[in-house]
Image (cartoon, rainbow, N blue to C red; front, side, top):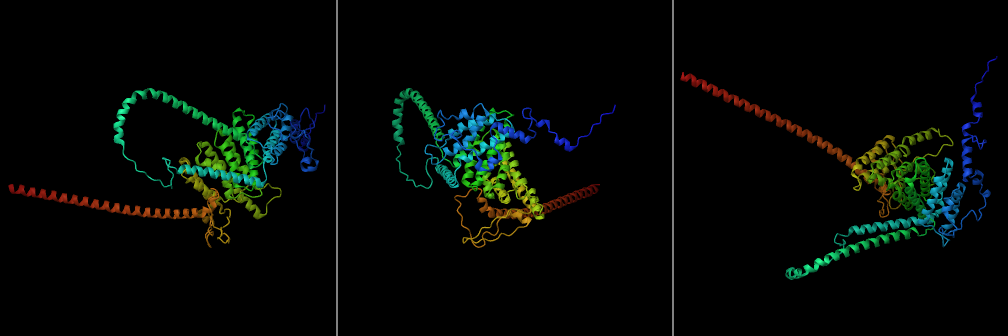
Length: 604
């Protein structure tokens, strides 16, 4: 019998055989992970073909069944989003999510008199949308659904002019609140306001006469007071309780009135959409298990990406940045659970870098510091050491080591550009090439020296400032800043600094005031924008302080040497005095002994 010969399979033959892992018993034609993901999306009703998305003329016509009537109220029995979004079938839930975009656009239109969406409406909608995402199965379906939920904010956004107006209104409201707090602080304990003149009136001394009359009256009223005190104390307690209940009821009424207030499209409504999302996540965080937490981490990442993308399309307007930063800080970063805010700290810098690489206007050091303002607040005075450590490592140090202009990746990219080794089709660089690293370091130094900073974090912040300065010195470069001109608007080119000068001066502008002093108004300047105007003065102070410190060290060394010399001379003088005393004592003893011997001889 001839032995059976087995031929070895080549790699090409192995590749031609379909992998049984990727096969479905119900769908034997699906032989790849991409085809499987596409099948998941088709079954869930979330698949969008490339031809339909690329060619707008071939889109499906929208019928009256596909869009909700924007004039209908959310409380009406005709429209119940709880049934639609929180339904039992997957296709019904996903179809309701897709209908929300057109509904938001029609409902938030300025021309719709009876329209508008309130905070309470968004909370109700997020309850159903949370359930939809909670019930979503398979990773492709979860990712597509999370993207759609995050992109719904664009249906609530307004035009650039409307958003600028909303941002200005928000800034004015913040300034009024700050002015009110300052006026309250200026009042003394006695209710007297500083700066106002008060007239002091003369008062006659009637204490002696009053004492005489009070003695007689007290004896008569003691018996009556004993009976009245119990009744008055009970009445006072009842009045206090009623006042407290009235205040609580008024606060609840104010909150309810604000919650049911309707809002039209604009950045304020988008920030409210983000607030209600994180409020829902925070409320339902304890109800999640470990198997479903990843899908919500992904949803948070998509939401943060769209938030920074919205900021970039509005050219990093300071009012819009503060609007979203306050929402993130008040709803997530300032409260527990730690898992939610730690995840937000981990993903913030990477998402901001990806958005900045595609933004029409790149971030500068001022706008970069504005975007990270909530995290600098955590670094300054957060109660939890774990959160502080995570912010330092994953925001500040990560920016220095991976995304700054002086990091190793940026230096390698610069070398490739010089050598012409760039490849076509490479991804866009995520380096913040317009952010001045020295200004960020100086801002960290200002936080460390701020009296409001917690004492246990000062040393670490000063060390962080030193690390930034060393990194700038090692790289020998930094982002060039435009030098300021005179009042007439003349501009001068900035001289390049050597590596040593870069570290000492932290790459500051030394040519800004050669022809005149530039007049600036510091009333509406943000803390991040003050860095550009004060960086020269701070660097000069650092230089002068360094020189003073070196001169002080030299003087101290001289004083120490002089003290040592004086101590040595004093010690020598004391030793000589002691030796002289010893010699004198010996001479006296010798004279005494000699005199005694002479006396003995005479006696003999």
